[in-house]
Amino acid sequence: DTAVSQTPKYLVTQMGNDKSIKCEQNLGHDTMYWYKQDSKKFLKIMFSYNNKELIINETVPNRFSPKSPDKAHLNLHINSLELGDSAVYFCASSQDPRGAYEQYFGPGTRLTVT
Amino acid sequence: QKEVEQDPGPLSVPEGAIVSLNCTYSNSAFQYFMWYRQYSRKGPELLMYTYSSGNKEDGRFTAQVDKSSKYISLFIRDSQPSDSATYLCAMNSNFGNEKLTFGTGTRLTIIP
Image (tube, rainbow over all chains, first blue to last red; front, side, top):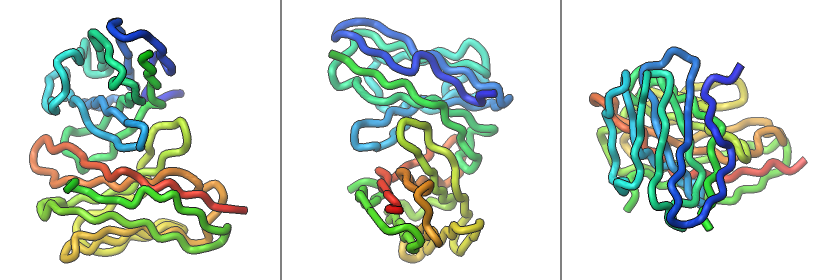
């Protein structure tokens, strides 16, 4: 019974394409996040939503657009993909937006842009 | 200078050894300190959580926080091959909707 799930797990695409990654959590949490992990394993937050409201928006190119249709889902759409977008993207959720609460991570989506 | 610094390793130790993993940070407002473990091709999972300074023990794992030195540690006793993973420290101040700031992670291998 997966707590935080992401689809797809792997995504290989060409530069210039548009792609989406979907995330769902069944933990009943109010807050969801998107993180990017580069090849050196550095995990950096991109966005955070609390009850469908955007609360953290780091300095991310506006080619990246998150969408939260409800508090159990947070999708990430990426326009005009670039080589530098290749990374592992993790979705996470927590009970509360305050960082003191444990964040539960999904399995990641490995994006390769060629 | 990054807010959180962590030696990326890799670190290899024999099974049964005591492992010490460390992070330093620059933001004195940080109050909550966590260690996440990430197995290869998996998402991070919370291992230990500490508030403010002090020690916390959970089985073979001990987390230490020294706020005066802005230094946190994770000790693993009687290390096992199943402990082989990347360990990421994370911290924040918990003021409002504060983001969690991660270290770069230390890749640990326990040699049987």
